[in-house]
Length: 284
Image (cartoon, rainbow, N blue to C red; front, side):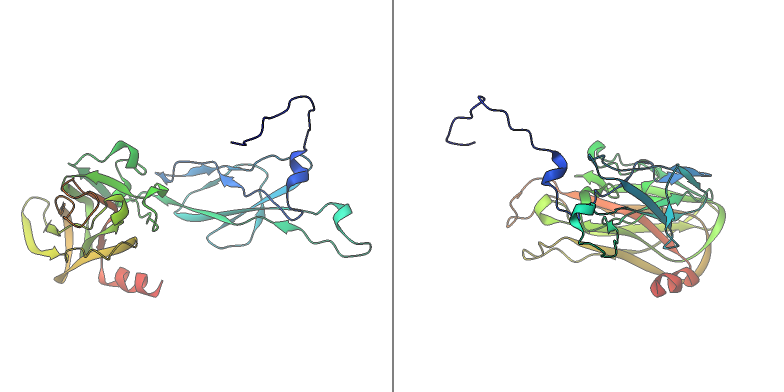
């Protein structure tokens, strides 16, 4: 607060748009909050309305051509949707006879995933309400999280092992199995100590494979980090179900600010890939 009293004897009205940089364009947003769909989903785009800024909105699907956005549109397959806005500068900002080019906003992009009806998830561990991501199917939706656990793509579990079973309506060829996790020590988020995995060919009898062991964290590992912890089967198999137990590492260690308190686990995806899918992802 100011150390001088605020006078109300004179009223000064500042036009909002007069305070903006001449090349300012409000960043549009994707108003559709749901990002996992069964058959199709309607995409809506919005933008902040600022006086005297005549904007145009555009969208692009899977890095394709930019198109004018005039009405909500529908997508039927997993797609990356990007949006941006433009406006032309005020005439007063342009020298006489100079060719006018539009100003553009930053680009915003979101991934919308069509859920694979062949895959289902039973999650026995309850996730934290404030870190629910997209809900019950988050860990099989194909949406990967970034290095900020608060962006809505990560699912958080406090002080517990994450126990789950993934089942396939039709057997799925699998060679690699694992989970994707994030570590952010400043927020008490640790990697698991290990991941226990078993799989079933017939959906009834399960084969236990060696644990995925994860090294203990060091006191200088404070930068956020994402890791895929994977194991490989001796040979590719047609799998009907997979059981996971992602083991919480226990309480925060003595050198940590939260020493003695429970730790968080954050996951964005259970992973199960065939040899061919693995090669495709490596090319990407």
